[in-house]
Structures are given as structure tokens and as C-alpha cells.
Length: 464
Image (cartoon, rainbow, N blue to C red; front, top):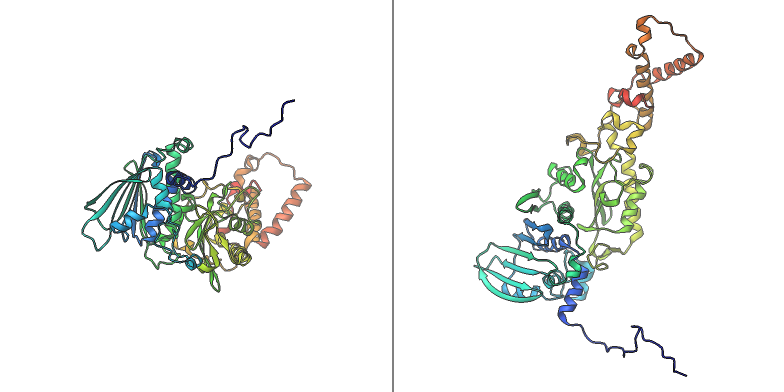
């Protein structure tokens, strides 16, 4: 008999390989797989570094969807030559000094992985100059290795140019989408970053054409400031123009601020829910579900709202070091944050501020199914706060229902809708006519004093 042998995990009889420390180049490419998901993630990391450097203006250039060429230039603090050489090494950062600093982070970056991970999978040129230097330092890096270092003339700040992204990892490159999709993802990322960082100007150029130009806003400008409202429109979509309402709530050391779109504008996905924690854009399922819960009674099934909310709380109460791309967070008192978000949103939505500034057709029952591309209108002072309801006007659905009846009666009494009355042709009155006329008369008397702004157009009233 032949001896039965148990195969190893690899499916053969080879001896299991010994454990070894990975080569640094392989380790860097593995780290790049966690941090660098595509051109949009490169832009996100570089723009956040520019914000940490106190930049006032950031330029982004992309070619070929950001794969062929990608450039991010800022006017921040810049670096010395020594810092420039160290910054491309893994776990090199200026944000942390000791373990306790992790509990009170106030910067976007802190791990020191982004620049090293990007350099490992691209051909990178780093040009940087500090304010106290006469010239800038330029490093040419390929696959994580420094090929050349020289002194050049450049303004104060940092300029990072990326060429041939994923040139040494073809398996990663083939999973990228079309250039058009990557361009849209970069623009969407910049819009998300621009909303809380309203004091910084950002410009995106796509193939030498300006795709996005966001001007800076005064640092202490209120939520009602027109330029801040324009940023919110750029973040949530042009269809929200005239439909955004500033929102602010605070309870002790927890504050929520931002913009809420009228519930008549909805989406099929959650991409319209923009959430930030301490000015950092996150995609946290718990927070998204909290917003959906607050809107539950206002939207039809399968539709989601549009809003942009920034949750600000002490750094000791939130942990952002739980996701490779910092997309998720962990709160020390998660229940408190979620309850505050749900209750304050519900209280604000219960005031229905959009009813006093909406066009008449927005009050119809069909309006709840209006899509995000059907409502447009200019921004005005009425949209910067809660509008005042005219004196004597019924509120909410009462005004809606009564005015539908008034419009129905107006349409019924219109001679042009009954040509037989003009031609003299006989019309036999029925018992049903008497009933309808009696009911309409009562409703008309009860709603005779309704203001004109709550009236429905005839085409909507005829469908009721």
C-alpha cells in the first residue's frame, strides 16, 4: 500500500516558506494600495497636506484623468531641503511627537504615509521652498527612489507633480475607470474639501481648461454669506440653488452647522449627504443613517435628502485613526452625537422654512416626487434664514389642501371650460352636481382669505 500524504495549504508537498520581513519597495506598494485608490485619492491627500500647511490658494492640474499627469501647487509654509528628503519616507510626519498626540489631533494628516505611498507608485517631482530660503528644493523620485536633488527658483510653498500613476503596478492601473470618470471624481473630491475650508481658494484645471474655480471667503463669514452659500451649491449641485437653508445647533461642546436642501430635492443614492467631522469629509454609515432617520417622514421610499453638515467636537472625543483613508470615525459618545443630530434636524425640518419661499407648484402632493433636476431659482435674501409666514395664512398641509379646493372651484366656474354654456346647448343638472356645488361652496367660504402665494396653478389643481 502507498502511504497517504496530506497536502499543504498551497496544494502541493513543498515545505512552507519561512517568515521574512518584506522588501521596503514591496511594503511601500502594499501601503499605496491602502492609501492610493486612484487620482482622486492622490488629490485628496495632497490638498489636505496643503491645508495643514496653512495654504490660502491651491491649484490642481489634471491630464488624462490624473493618470498621465497630476499637479497640486499651494502657497503654504513649504519645507527645507532636509524635511523634503525625509517626507517621502514612510511614517515621517510633523504632526505627532508622542503617543498622547493621537488623542487630540487637529490636522488632516498625521500618519506620514501619503507622500511615501504616492511616490512608490508614480514618477514624482517635489518642489518646495520655505519662507526663510532664497531658493527652492526640487526632488525627482521614481518608484520611491530619489533620482535627483537640485536647487531651483520657485515661490514659497510646495508643488507636487505626479506622472504615470501606477506605472510600476499594471494590475492596479487596469482597474482605473475612464478619464472622464476620474476627472469627475477629482472635481467631486475638491468640492467636498472646499465646503468646510471656505477661507481657501481652489482651482481645478482639466487639460488647461478651468473646470472648477472656487474663490476664498473671509475666514469669519457667517453661514448666510453669499459666497459660502455658493460653495454649498457647488458641493451639493446647481439644482439646489435657492433651495438651501443654513443650519446650526449646539449643545455644550458639540456643534453641527451646514446647509440643508428642501426635501423636494432628492436623490436615489446617499451621495447628496455630505458629512464632515471636525472639517474632515467622512463617509460614516452611522451618521448617514442618522440623517436618513431625521428625514424619514418627509421623503418617499427610495429617495434620500441633500445636505452638508459639519460636526465639530473636541479631538479627544473622536478617533479618526480607524480607516486607511480616514473615511470612518469612532466617537467616544456615539449615542449622544447621533441623538443630537437626529433631534436637531427633525426640529429644523418641522419648521418647514421652504413653504414660505417655494413656488406655488411646490405645495402639491406630486411635489414630493420631484427629482433633483426640476427645481431651479436664484438665491435671494429670503433663502438665508427662516421666512416669515404671512399674517392670516394657514400653515403646512392645511393651506395646501384648502387652496387646492379653491383652485378646483375656480377651474369649475371658468366659462371657457364649459362651452355649452356659451352656445346655449342644454345641460341637465344632476344630483351629483348639487352635492359637489354644496361642498365647494362651504370650502370656498372657509378659505376665502388665503393669500395668493399659497395658491396652486390650474394644471396641478385639475389633477387633485
